[in-house]
Structures are given as C-alpha cells and as structure tokens.
Amino acid sequence: MTLQDVRGRRARRAAQELRELLKPRELLRRRRVWCAVLLGCCVFALGLRAVSTLPPHRVWGGCAAAGYALAAWCAGRGRWRWAVRCAVGGALVVPGVYLLVRGAGQSEVFVLERAAHHLVHWGTPYESAPDSVRGYTPYLPGAALLGLPSLVLPGPLGDARVWCAVVFLGCLWAARPHGGAWGYGRGLAVLCAAPPFALACVVSGVDLPVAGVCVLGLALAGRERPVPAGVVLGLGCAVKWTVCPALVVAAALLVGRARPRTPALAALALGTSLPLVLLVLPWALASPGVLVEQVFAFPSGHGRLATPAASPLPGQFLAGLGAGGWWGAPAVLLLAAGGVGWWLVRRPPRTAGEAAVRLAVGLSAAFAFAPASRFGYFVVPFVLSAWALIVTGSAAQSGIGRDGTDVSPGGEGLAGPTGHRTGTATP
Image (tube, rainbow, N blue to C red; front, side, top):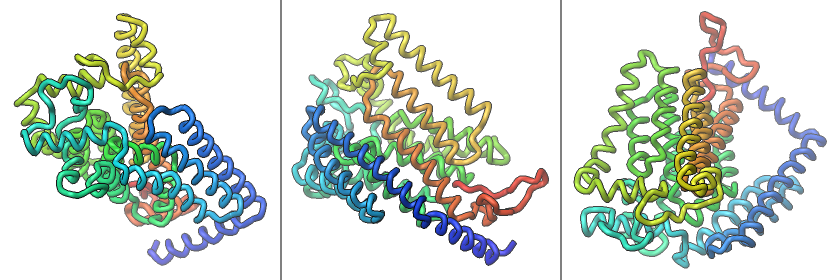
C-alpha cells in the first residue's frame, strides 16, 4: 500500500465523519453534552470559591466560573473555538496572570524557590533543622532546578509555576504521536481548560512536571527508546519519588514491545541511573538523615512535624483510627499495589496509552490509600488518563501508525503471520 493510497483513505474517512457530525441531530446532541460538561465545571468552580479558605483558590474559582459559563453559552450556539478560548482564558490565563502579578500562590511554589536559594548559597536545598513546616522541602534535590529561574529572572517571569508549566507542556508536546497533530493540539487545549489541570497550574504547579515526565517517559518507552525514557523518568524521580511507579510500568511496556527484552530493560535502568547519580546521590551521601526526614517521613505523616497534607481520603481515615489504622493504611496500599502489579503481569500494556491508564490507576490507588495525601495529587493520574484518550483519538483520526501503515478502524494495514495488523496507533 502506497502513501498516496493511505492519504486517500484518510481523506474519504474524514469526509464521511464530517458529514455525520454535521447532521442536525448530532450537532444538537454535541451541543447539549458540552453545555452540560461546561456548566458542571462552572458549578465546581463556584463550589470551590464558596468552601475554600485559601485566597488563591477563591480567585481561581471566581474567574473560572465566569469563563466556564461563557464557554457553555458559546458551545450552545455551536461556536466551539470561542468556547475553548473562554474556558482557557477564564480558568487559566486570567487567574494565572493575576496571581503571578500579585505574587500569590500555594506554599509549594515558594518551597521550590527557597530550595533553589539554599542550593545556590549553601550547597543544599534543605534546611538542616527547620522549626516549622515552612522550612521543610518535601521534594528530592532535583526539584530545586525548577526554582532556579526565580534567582535570575524578575517578577512573574521567574515564578516557579511558569517553569513547571513550561516543562509540562514541553513534555506533552514531545510525546505527541506521529500523525493527527491537529487533533492532538485540540485535545491539549481541552486538557488545559479542565478544572483539575487549570487549578493546579494556577495555584501550585509542582505536580505538573511529574505528570509531564510520566507521559513523555511512557511515550518514549512505547517508541522502544529505553535510554531516553530512562533519562526522562530518572529526572522525574529526582524531583518527586512518586514517579518511581512509572519506571515499573515503562519496564512492563518494554517487555511487551522490545525485542530482545533484557538489553532494553538494562538500557532503561542505565538511563534512569544517570540523573539520580547526578542530582540525588551527592545529597543522599552528605546528609541522609535530613533527606529521609523531609522527603519521605514528613510527607507520609511520620515526620517530626505533622504534614499539612490531610485531605479526607480513605488512607487518612484509616490513619486516624489509631495504631491499628497506621498499619491498616499501608496494608491496603500494598494490596492495591499488588493488584496493579498482577494487572501488569497478566495483561502487559502494548501501547503507551494503555501503559498510561495502568499507571493512572496505580497512582490513584496510592494517593487514595496513603496515610497522608491531598486531592491535588490526583492531577497526575488525571493527566495520564486524559493523555491516553487524546493519543487514542488523534491516532484514530490520522489512521497512520508509527511504521506508516493504515491502522485506523477499517484500514487494511500490513498483516502479520497471524493476520493482525502490525501498525500501532499510539506512541
């Protein structure tokens, strides 16, 4: 099959889909669905503004509610581009610029900037003996790199949130599939307008690089590039240890795709070790007690001071039952981890999208049953799930796999010896 034949099929299929979408009944249904979704986002934003005691959250809630309301009005009139613009502007641009100019945000932003200041002036991102939770840095040493721009760029340009967003968007754009770039870009625009992402980006942003490196690492593993995948995931592990489960999922993806398997897994391990040796090992050897206290004990609720991460989640409820609860929460967490591990062994992911879904399920279970957690952490599994949907849709629109074959529904592709198509629709 020539490339011209494939393009001809894509054009005919796109024309048929466009005719279906332009039917009056289908247009009316789409308008109703999107109006309902956007009005639901508006209600969520208003509810957050009403119940939250944090000023940045209240600012976001008011701006986002207005943006989602305007977006719902535009969607009801079929003006889809203006609907996306209003949603992104109200939920992301307006509150983001306002909070950046005012220098307001959650404490995580200033933790990154303070860690960078300590790294430059004292050679370590950690305070040796903090007397309050404000002095803790519950991230691995690599997180200080996100705060370095605040030392050289003035005002909002050096804000850690800006560079967290830059890293995130760069990772997701680098993870785009071959073909279907237009659909992928539209999907990213919708993702940026979604409340979980927009809220995290505007008020905090620290979990966005974690989500970005997880997505890019799985995309590179799906392309059978284990060394770059390991380097990317290693950089993420040097920022937050919650990236570590992505290494297991990436290894399972390589086991299912790469031939031979052992060199691919060794290359993944080699790529991961490089950033960890450069960014974590020096401080782990110089002050292991401080690192363990601030990075592991404090966030999990076992530190010298109580962690402020106390959202009403199942793990927090179990931990509040006393000594038995403290053991019960890790036990349930291990059971959930075992279930996800069995899923990986029983049905290894064949594409990066499938791997992202498995990682999202695993991280959701970990955040839900951790003794100390907060709702904001769930932006990582949300981004992973959304990215899996985006790459599936953009690859289906393009109809082209990574090897150039027609892999869309109805396409013939190149059949292997068992009659299955050899193309793949995701990275």
